[in-house]
Image (cartoon, rainbow, N blue to C red; front, side, top):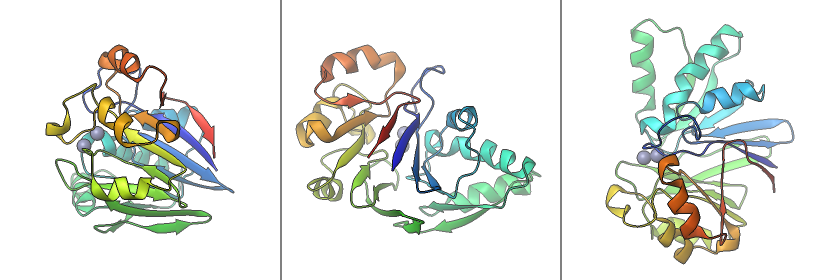
Length: 229
Ligand SMILES: [Zn+2]
Ligand SMILES: [Zn+2]
């Protein structure tokens, strides 16, 4: 299985060094996206990977879904079928609003409090995260965890992390962003096994402080980073 970080920025990230949240997972000819935030759709185009089987949305904040609409336009232009989009409740309403206003985009939206599906060999399930709005964390193939946005310690994520192979976790600040529903580098490093951790959702303008705090104890993702698991 191959994991590509398309977007590793946070909602607050300025500029184009880090696009907003998106991870591409590929296995045996199948591919799924976990979130598709602003600009990450361009990274998908850059690697020539328009044909995706499904998108899983962690929550409905703009930095996790904004790339989807532009991507759906490309799918339409290239005559591709409506893609399956798994999401917590609400994404269908947003998509319908774009359609009502005349945008010719389409998708098969499957809403659920805890989205899950099996796409070829890629098995995806979710647990509730602890964010400002309803959000889920995704678990791939028992067991790679993608936290989405969450404050920690978040019971279900912590409990899933016990036997995880890889924990892709948000780290939106050095310290003190729990009140905004986010995880600090300090919390991520103290709660999860550092050798299994890849930190993402990084505000570019605070990158220097975050790198300093992490001090090579865990990996920090960057746009375009690819790993095999
Ligand atoms: Zn976010
Ligand atoms: Zn969020």
